Length: 96
Image 1 (spheres, rainbow, N blue to C red):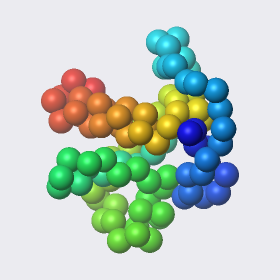
Image 2: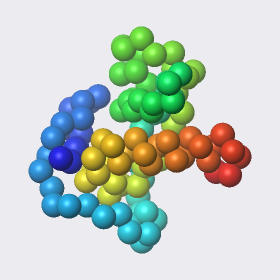
Image 3: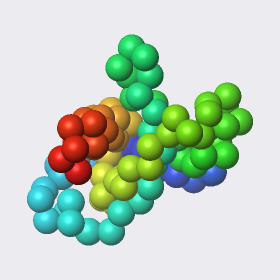
């Protein structure tokens, strides 16, 4: 399953062929997701700060992550979470 953004704050299904993200695709335009790492280590994704706040999340807990457009448009939610988790780890380690 693949996802897109037809409405503000909602990820929905969009059928797409299998997706492989190559290095050249990583260098293109970016989209933004706001990310929070939960206490159990899980990563929660939000389309924008307002949507997160509507769900009871303190905006100061969010990290703004740039997502490659190809991944954002065609990747699965799991691929987005994994990418965001890698970015958070890089920030935590000071390598971003």
